[in-house]
Image (tube, rainbow, N blue to C red; front, top):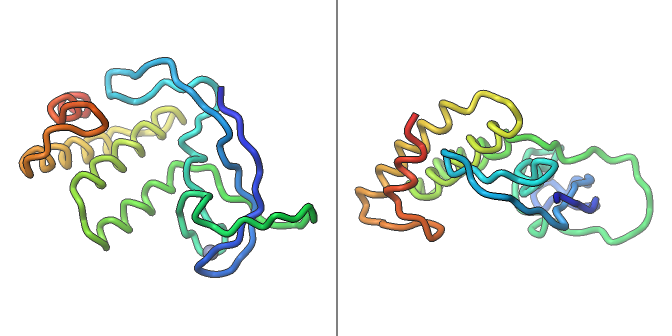
Length: 156
Ligand SMILES: [Zn+2]
């Protein structure tokens, strides 16, 4: 079951303050034909990362500064959206451009969108493309699953 706590965070980039839900627990029963996890309860994929509402920096909540006071403030919330994955994808493309990171993020984005009832086909196709590149680079396994299985699961 997905449970979370609300944190007050400060962004390391813009110093803006905001609230973000951070996962306390979550679980899943099994995976579907696309190797997307079937979570129990609320979709935790929209909470894995926090997004600064002031400058759109996306990172794990633990990489923001936690403000540990009990003062209630009128602050914006980190949006709970699958679009966070798009921001991370752009960062990888502008950074080391790692095929494995891109394959993983496109796959996560596809699964997040599938859970939310959004169109995910284009994301799955991109994941498929990058998992094939990963295989060409000689990587055989990711998250204890053969790359061959990732390629098959993202075929659509
Ligand atoms: Zn910020």
